[in-house]
Length: 133
Image (cartoon, rainbow, N blue to C red):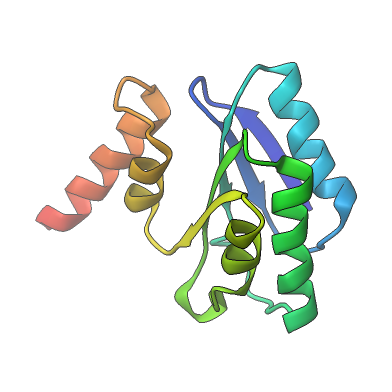
């Protein structure tokens, strides 16, 4: 189950359980990007607890590269225990622009989303407050 939100400079995709890897999910993201003229996507998988099979990770990499293509830059934020590098490697080897990481600020920096986006400023401010305390 996923939801898409235009955050001005990028499309924010929040994914919750159950995590389903289908071409339709990826096509929905592409269609939303095209209709809203966006080329950057942040996929938030931090709420996902279930793991994927090796085949599903491979399939996700194929979908990232073949459906989203090289024009849409995608970063996925997930828990470290869920990251194997399989989907990222498969996508990048097929000219997809995909990065998978655990840190939201690293994800935003890789996407090239600047602080002028009010959503990004709020996230970075929240992270800074956590570091101080």
